Image (cartoon, rainbow, N blue to C red):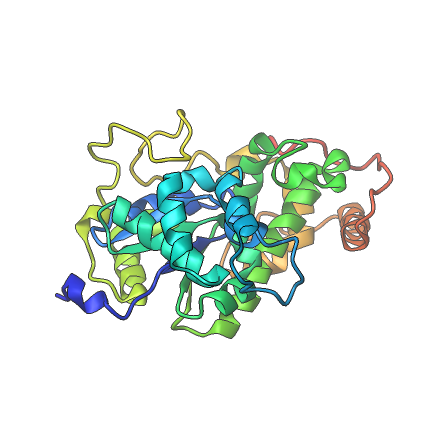
Length: 327
């Protein structure tokens, strides 16, 4: 087995866990965070957002007091659990943004008595080229879940100010929005990730992870060039306090299939609409179809929704719009 001293060439941030929200990213984050060498933060979002006011090509701008303040005061930055003193120390040794962020994840790892620090922010699935340009050594684990189960979860999770609930199409057709949103997230991550190559990008199906956690975690550990640790399988045992950013209702539970099952919880019209919009991607990922034939009226509705999504316009209400995913 390799020893921690073998990690000297590795740099932080070491790994990013990404994927469409509601796809099991938190489960994987908790598993990896239980590894004795690796700490994985939870949904900080700050890396691209702190510099969004800069020009697109300024991926590694000079570090200024204003930029440090933008990072430190970003609404989710507290989830790293770093003090103002730790942030100031990271800034003192950095001349540019990349070095500053690296130092922050070094401090995050050290605070958790680990050598390596990573990040789980699902939305980073759409920012792989940016993150790779800033941290070319970093690795990305993209977890993918059946989009119909993602839709069931999203319907209860999203709000007008959260997730796809912010999109205009949600007001008219949440099912179509879920399908197109899931498709965009997954396809973007796969396209950009595959361009990075197999040493930087790894895909993992949620269903495979919960069906055989040990086998899949061994695969992930091998991709990360880390020794396998059984601690990742028992991440939920003996937890008495929450990590920063985890809600009070986020219990430490063992891996399960999840609370969603589209086969019993999604009605036939919703299944047909979802598969009219994303069935080819479901098939490419190895997921079984839920409908034998898409009704013509559903196919027509799906085309209208697809055009509205592409044009980023709010569609006119349709009497054929399903309003619920529930069976």
